[in-house]
Length: 183
Image 1 (tube, rainbow, N blue to C red):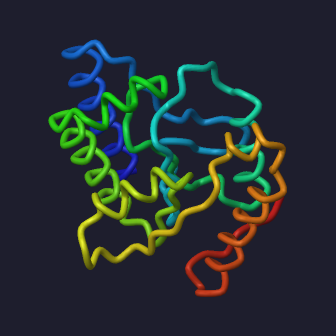
Image 2: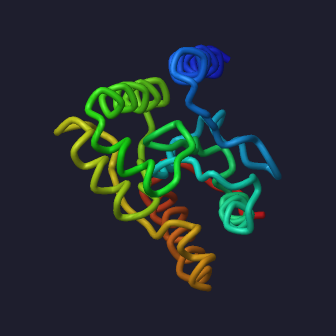
């Protein structure tokens, strides 16, 4: 309960700073279909680049949530590097805004500190590149990158994404970190 309360306080700080003060539309992965979303407290943290401007759940979101649930990863924490909805063009602007980058880095590192995950999973190569810079050297959680679920859906490569997720579950089981229940 302490961890969930700490996450809730962090969420309120993010909303106060980004939405109330700066009028950015913030978004957090919701709880749905056995997946805890941003409120997940498990030992694995999935990190995307930024929330899309589309509606939830998109077909890609449905693939992601179903895959998490079926692989027993429903309590994983799911978040984004940037907490504000943005188009591709807006995201390029966000990445060049040093103040905004520092603010989002601070929020993400606070999430990581609170959750103390054993594994950080970057969704997509751009996210992985950012995390390699943002995560302090010598930090303990292992960082890996996998294909982004929206890429898998868009290019009809869901099997590749499902394999990525099954590999995460299997590898994590092998090192004895967690026992997952397969749905």
